[in-house]
Image (cartoon, rainbow, N blue to C red; front, side, top):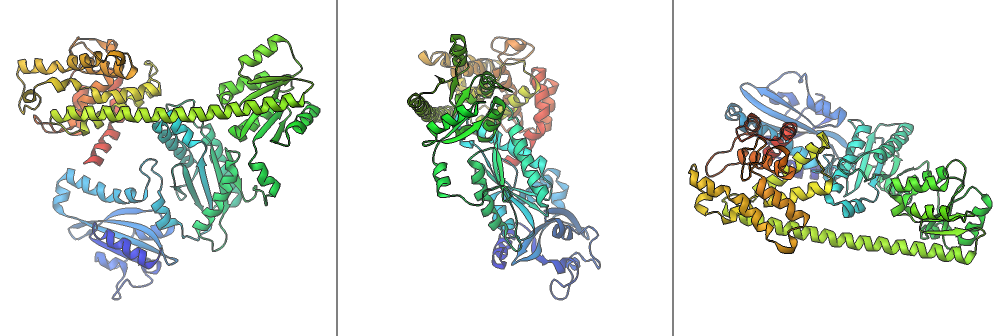
Length: 637
């Protein structure tokens, strides 16, 4: 950063902090005065350097550090952050005085401390993944020249994850990948989310061999990772890595690593470094990159040569001598392979075993296979088609037949992929419109109820958290990801029946009379009745789920709820989850008839049975996630 940039940053910080000052390394170490011949510790009325000088520590490890400093009866919070100004190492100290009133009031004191310590996290950290963000890279990292290994990592087919499984799946995939990378790097290393699915890694002071090994390990562990709630989603990453040259800036190294990453992207699930990258690409090589790739799998060298001769003018040809080699190449290249010509009878692993493996990983849906064999027996051919082959050719080969069947199969799969993309896009648009209409309707209900629309959002978030915890804890209930998403969406309609309840009852500030309470209870059956009268839509999964939630979200585990007095798991699990979410949010939120309880008190009341009995499994889930819920409530204040 330049001096001017730092001054601009300090100007912004002075709006928040009591004192903001910039110290050079010599000033921190006591070798030079800060100003007017005073030392940096003179500010604290001290005559010697602080024993626990966080600024000196920050100069060494470049981490952000915070501590409390006392001066007489006054208390200050000091945060030190590393800055490199015009090439010179410096520390920026951000000092906030905490007055006695703040310290006396525990709640406000905690909030102030949290807001100050969290300021830099919000400024320099990605909200979704928790790693550093692009701003941190621009402000802190890009101009550094310290020796380091630098890598650019890009998740393969990330757009496909979003389009196929939804954006929530994409978020979970990102979080999973980040956790894998964090488990492989040191605290002194930096992981930056530079774009949607692209990350930068800066590993200071690492040796070349260790750097290469670490990138390989990251690539392998991302590929082996399981995405929670999406067992069929297979992660992989393309990584480009370089060692910084003398006097080279991180930004320049990132540019070099980015080019290598795109080389890795041609194959996917791969690491390309300066040591492994091709030194040059010929004109013929550039032409090959525009052609589709065909993998020929046959143990006969002659058969491979004949097929390569037939197809080599129009396609890039790769070869494997058995099924095991074929699967290894699929792991490396994946959908970069446009088609496989696969023999049946081979040593090590035959063609049927390859097809079985492709079915297990769902690759047979993305990569077409044409069987090649002299086995013309009907059972053999039939079994090949049952395992998903697209076509079948016999030896000896007819060049015209081979060319036409290969061309037609590749063309058919290309059309299929475009159709899937189109349908996926239309489905996502319909899902967006459905969520929008549900949101509008729930907002109308909450407006009449005198509550903010945040109640509906809170119920959705609580329901989602509880479902995630429940599926981690047990498989007793049939709750695949798509059903969980349906329950979260339908939860917004849990109180739709209140639209028919008198405003005077809905918004009465005092306790309801028994007669008024009996009328209020009818909102469950009214809402269910409204949904049951939707004609041709009444059988839709969303409507049926919303019906269950509307009618039974006030039922209780011991049968003392309403309107039907259902007991235990006779209550649909969707209604059970929304029920406990509704009670929790009602307790921690201010209402016309009560003040808000703190989160710990709310959980104790629910566990104690003050709000009725709930499924013990769901109570365990609530205890498991209560700290997360508490943090989210604090963040929303």
